[in-house]
Image 1: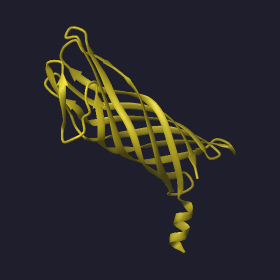
Image 2: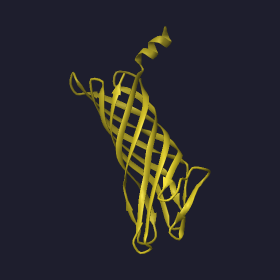
Image 3: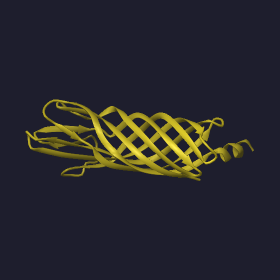
Image 4: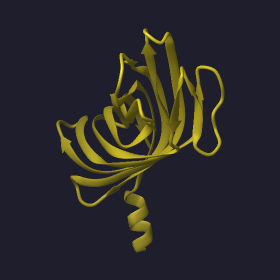
Length: 191
């Protein structure tokens, strides 16, 4: 009976979104860093602690990437990675009216790049390595970072904004070092 009571309080949801991705970076030289349009889709659950506080988690497929332009070296490099990621958030739900709620959420995400591509070739195995002008870049599979956001709930529909700054440099060599930095606008539905 206790298991039934707990499972009855769990809410499932699906969510998708589009956003802007780049890398927060340190670099040498005249490199221009541009954002990329990316997307994500996922399915998750909400477990309430009480009427206002809840735990939110999901399994998502998320796109992240960046574009580098170095006019002096005539380099135009494009990187796009596909991640399987799990955000884990603690959230606070504020009731605005009979129909609207606002949810503030913060936590972490864990991600693994299972596939990707650069401007010229497919990159999948081991440490992803490729040529970038006369330099070499190194892209890591594992990513970890902060996940913060705000949602607006209307009945069973959810509209939100999420920001994910990474903590682990996914690109690192003697010229470029950078962590993922992605903002998404999302829409979802709760079952």
